[in-house]
Figure 1: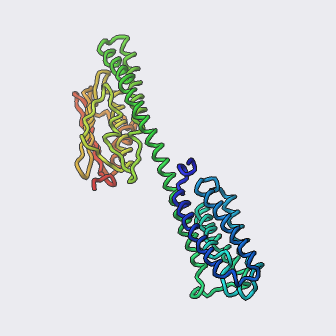
Figure 2 (figure 1 turned 30 degrees about the vertical axis):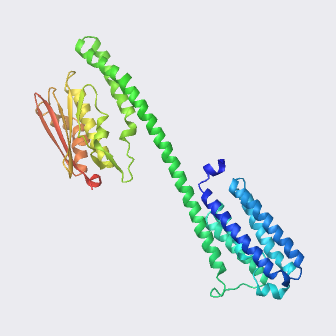
Figure 3 (figure 1 turned 90 degrees about the horizontal axis):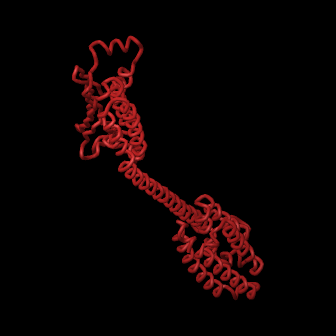
Length: 380
């Protein structure tokens, strides 16, 4: 049924009704044994009939789901307490003092169990306390001798254990549903990214490449196509590049793969390169800055080549281009002019991570070698 499919506490409700059946059998046996001692035996049988009828209604309601509501559970608590207190109307004071209430304490525990499943451990325990206060009110005193009467301890334990079990089941069910939704979203994103990659990205890459080959006024169109290609690659790779592991690590190779385009060639390991997500993000930003410098300063026909090496304790990323290189003294001049892109975005990032950035430049191109420690992303 619908309630059973969506309610993660359904197994607990079913088990509770097995306990309810056993407690009813015990209540019937107790009634047969003591009914002759009651002041009003006929009323005793009437009370038992009410007990059995209410138990049947609760069992059907909880098993079928329509009774799994706060109002019904509260009604069960009220009925249980009312029946307990009614014992004083059909039995004399001496009998009440020497016996448990006529709807037995075992049967009254059903209210504690139902409250614990519906409301959680705290309210389940409070219901157990309410049941025991009703018993104390019937007898006219509160028994604190736990050695001879540990019913209150049992009620509290049942409310706590059943309530925590129901709470855990609901939390696990919620986590499972969230994981299922995330998996569905991720699968859809991957499907769309494959379609975009097989269609729009390849067309844009072709336009950019052929436009640069033709030259002239078509070069501007080629550059626009190249920019849109890179933007699409970043968009469709967003899911892959997001940190998601329980240990907060990401695959650096996957993170950097989104920067590949017609002017950037990636050479990546065949196996994942796990690394602390924060370190990986800084490394990715430094690589992005280096590639931006290639696009801006290496020349319109320059290409970049990125190599990722997993060296165990460290990860090294090399970014090489075949452009014009950096003229001698140009970096010092940039610092004096206040342009700190290389000093802060690349060198500064690597040093803040405990790594290093080495720049090699000549008229045949520029190469950055970025090395960072694995830290929390280490294999193990």
